[in-house]
Each structure stands twice: as C-alpha cells, then as structure tokens.
Length: 471
Ligand code: GLN
Image 1 (cartoon, rainbow, N blue to C red):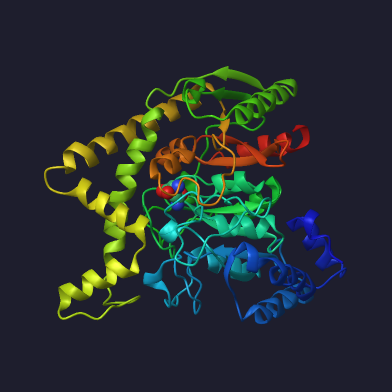
Image 2 (cartoon, rainbow, N blue to C red):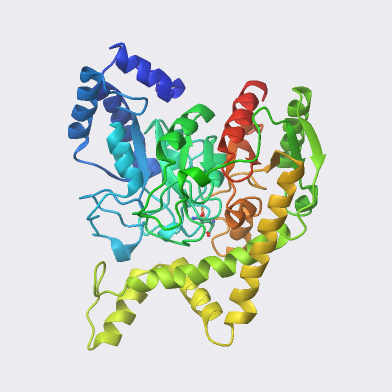
C-alpha cells in the first residue's frame, strides 16, 4: 500500500527509483481513489484513456536512467489547458466536444519530463468564478467537507489533490484562481510571476493576467513543478527571456510587510485570529513584521472587474458557432451567432461578455477601461515601491472560510470579494503563494499568502518551507 496521504514528489521519485513500487502501481493507486470518490466530488470531468501509454514511457525512463523528478508523477490538469488529442472544454457547453489539436507548452514540458497526466478537472466556466459552481458540468465538492465549495476557478484540480486523486495538479490564475482553492482545500498554490510560465495553449480568459499555476501538498512539490515549467517560450509573446528574469531580493530575506489597512472590512474573525498567530510565529523565528501602505490596492478588485471583462469579451468573441465548438441552427448568420453564443455560454460568461463589451465601447472606453488601466499602473507602482523596503508582503489568502454550496450564487459581488487579497499580485504581475496555516475547530482549512517581487519565487519557497516547520 502506497501512503498517498503523505506522498510527495521526492518520495514518489525515490520509491520508483528504488523499485519499491512501479509507476503503474502508483497511478493505479490514484485511479482506485478516483473510482471511489469522483462520483461524489466531481473533481475530474474525464480520466484519460491513454494513461497506460504514458506510464510505459515513464517506466522506460526509469529503466534507461533518464528519469527526472517529475517522471511518472501523476498530474491532474485544469480543463483549459490544451493536451493534443484530448478534449479541453473550459467547462463550457460551447467547447463541449473541442479536441485540442496541439500541446500547450506546459503539457510539452510535462511530457518531456515523463509526467503522467491522469485527466482534466472541473473549473468555473472559462475560469470565471471563485467556487467551481459556474461549470456547465456540475459543481465540484470540497473533499474536506462535501457540503462546501472547493474554491475556484481551479476547484477541480484542488479537490483532486486534496482527495488523493492526483499527487499534484495544474490550474490557472487570472485573479486568485489557484491560491483561493488552495486555501479552501488545505493545499499550497503558487501564482508565478507574470511571464514566467508560458501561456501558449491555455484557453485565454484575461491575457494580461492569466498564468498557469501549480498545486501541491507542500512547498517543495510546487517548487519542483515551477522549476520545470518556468522557461522562456517564443510561442508566448509575453514570456520573459531568461536574461531578464532577475530578482532584486536576496535569499535569507526576513522583512515582511503587512498592509493592515486592507483588512478594514469583511475579514472573518477566525481568519484574522489565525493570521495574527501566524505572524507571531514568524516573528519568533526571526522575521521582522512591519506595517506597509498600498493606498490604491483597495481599488484593485474594481480595476480587475473592468480589465478582465474587457479582455474576456475580446477573447470569447472567437466562439461564434461557426469555426468550432457548439453550433445552433439559425435562419441566417446572425441568428446562428446569437443562438450559438446565447445557448453555448453560461450566465456568468454572458454577464462578463456584456460588461466587457460595454466598458470597451465608444464613449465609455475612456471612462472605464482607460481609468482602470491607470489604476492598475498605480497599484503596480505601489507594490514595487513596497518591495524597496520589505522582502515579502503577507495577508490571509482569502478573507473568509470555504462556504456552503449554493451560497453567494445570487450575489456576484459577494463572490468577487473572495479575491480581495489576491488581486494586487495579478494586477502587478508579482508572484504569490498560498500556504496552509492551520484549521478551525470545525476542521476547515486556513491559509496565509505571501507575495514577493517579480521573479523572486525562490524567496516565497524559502519562507514557505520555513513556515511549514513552525505553523
Ligand atoms: N474569481 C476570479 C474571477 O471570477 C478569478 C478567476 C481566475 O483567477 N481565473 O474572475
């Protein structure tokens, strides 16, 4: 019996290298759990049929000595990551039968490493949401309490790892979509520096914000995945060349800034209490905690909810019922467009397309879109300014605990508030990582989030590994 609960990438690698278990046995152990639990949790939309071919390739690598840390490691991937020959639907009806015709760069990298991609996971439709309840294929449940949401939009990937249905997983972030589900499912989630990991072959939501982001049970697993994926990619025009990936922060950095003024409303008592305790523990292990101000950050969600829908409305215009995806019958072209898009997109996607089209329209462009872009610049300036005087910024990952299924669905603004602490990192492009920081009396997970300056992921891993020993 492989102890899946306490398995890490390194342990799995050692186990396979020493011949304690084979890659097939490892994958089978996960498939067994999937069989038991996926019906209830709905984390996977599909378990792939070509797993045995993938495991064979991995076994060969172990035999010929070319195995690396990710060889044979079972991954779950979010349903918006293209994997050639496999469906990628972004959990939307409009892409129900869309088969990827090429590999995204992240999949190429995983294949090169010999990782085993088990299946694709449920998500909020087109990554729009914080609870995995806007999927066209049903909700995903939180493995820690199936009456609650797993967070979102990468909720399926988070649930898969938390329920031992995969060792690790990939999600994507536009604004918190990996850190928030990591927090709700008791996992580590990293949003890399914008431009660190290729977006080539990811179904776009907001191009200026999207970033492929890993989930793991500990910091080290997430670090290993990040190091494999974080490479310059000429296929992605916003990928940053290696020589420009310089971080200003030195290792062994110990100064943490806390923007207390962002905590004014909406932070649940138990979240606040836990965050303060975490800071105390960090202080006791030699970290210096100082108060910082990010005056424009309170506007980050407002700016995000202009910029993101604007990009969404542009990106989703390609789904017109003609080229690919769901197509409805109509008397003429306009009717085909209207019916295909009207029936193919869910409510939240339609809401955002309308919002985005409005803020980009002639006459409102300057009032909304241009203003939001300016505020984004201010937020970025302030965050970078803050990193002149501190090495890290800490906040709770999410202001609230995982909520019950069905809650907040008729109040989109309350749902949007889940991302209040996530947004500054996405808008400014800096990396940020969520780490479990304890549990409530009811056994619900709590999480702390650290931000660092551009390309200072190593500082996040450093503080994260330290925090794992003191929490
Ligand atoms: N919850 C945010 C939204 O609904 C984040 C989405 C994301 O990061 N993909 O837009």
